[in-house]
Length: 159
Image 1: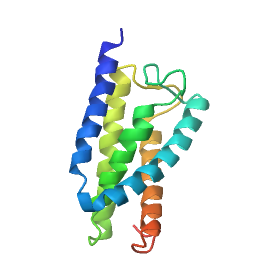
Image 2: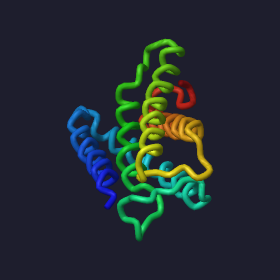
Image 3: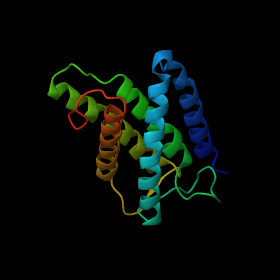
Image 4: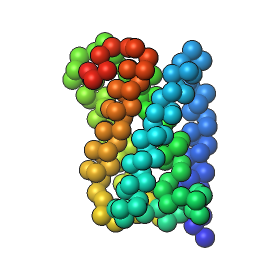
């Protein structure tokens, strides 16, 4: 039962574990901080959305402990934020930076919509794809601001 959903969740875990190899050794300290910053915000936002009845995760890990998606909040989104920040186009024009945000968030949103439509990994109750897009954009932006502030990079609120 739920074989496809379990395969998807297992594949996500495998992809996340393998992707850690691609974090440069000299950036692991920054990656750890980014991961923790993201997990905090993802946990709060994810819990609010699930408890408000906007999204449901019918097939998930740790179903007795948590109503939200453990994989998404603690692995997928943090890794997206890690790679987003480590490979951010710092010295590029504003349009390039905005396009970078839009490409990353759009790719994730598109994937989530497909998974929602064809599996039981996620179920939109009172949710739409554009809420995912906006919330992902917001979380990634906030994590970027905290990352720049924490590591004394540039003006934290600038793109």
